[in-house]
Image (cartoon, rainbow, N blue to C red; front, side, top):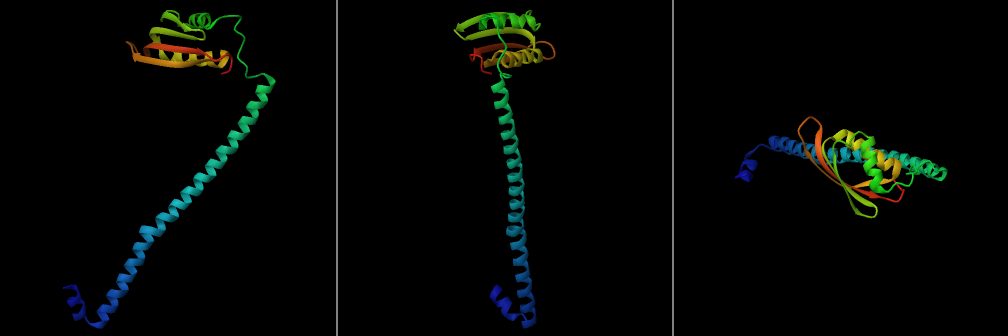
Length: 166
């Protein structure tokens, strides 16, 4: 059917349709293949530049961290002979979380679980961050559920003594 229609067209119309088909094929190739490939190439180049900048920044920071470790600046503070249990209990009270601290349970040497009820979650996370930075105590487990009041939570925290390496 199409072949018959094509043969019935004048030669001039067939040439015009052939040129139009070629132009459409080129446009399709440009917009469907070439242009997306070019855009992907530009994006990949930008990502490579960003990754290179990130790598350089990390290398600079790692050298700085190594220098600070050599100077002893990153060592945790002395605990004054306190065990993890005593440090967690006293530290929570000093941070103003003593009223919410309901239970402290030693699990093993170097591990303790704490239960808080209706504790201000932001204050708790700030205290946990200080424990890690100052004493090398790491949060191993954390379970939280919403409590009554804005920003309040019931929380169970498992702390692990990393032996003084934050």
